[in-house]
Image (cartoon, rainbow, N blue to C red; front, side):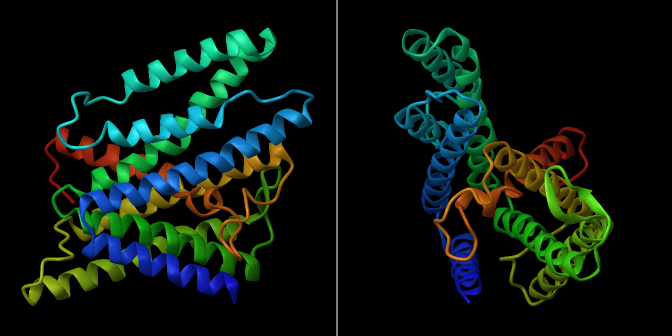
Length: 287
């Protein structure tokens, strides 16, 4: 029951933000999620380091500041338009910090883990408000979320009922090939439903959910996003396995941690963003 209630609350909150929120609300929500997920990541990294007889030396304030700056750079009219200088400065600052405080053998590993945390968590989530403010942005973000969620649900229930052959037993023993294929199909079916709703609304003069992309491209995009989402799920499983824990945290009743719920999104969002950039570059139309 806790799992269902938590899911309903989260879905309603996300839908409300997508269709009735403003850019600052979307950005603030994504930033809060990123900060919480980054905190969980630091805990996982610390546990993993302890398992190998080391002590992680990445200050919480550094990760919090880095995550916040990653979002601040994306704000309209901010003087710095690229996140790379910010990430570079933060990495050098952490390198200097560890150089004076950490054992020399840990300076590079700790700095690398800090940089990875920003690239893995903060950067992908900064793309959500950037996607939202594109033309037909709400439809883009909804399409992304629905593909990720539907694939996750299909993999869970169909894989549990019919799956036998393991997909990646070393990383996630519960995932099967049947579940993986069902996940792709589930995302494509969900994409079809979203497109049908969008077409119905557009025919009635309501463009709140406008999608101009050809149907076959939408199905292909849904499948690609699903594969990225599954890889994101497996990547987080690898991090948790390395730390010897089942969940990234306990912030979401019945679901584990924040990172457990957004792991698929952390790869799917960048994939969608760069697909859109490539389509624009080659003149292949918009979503």
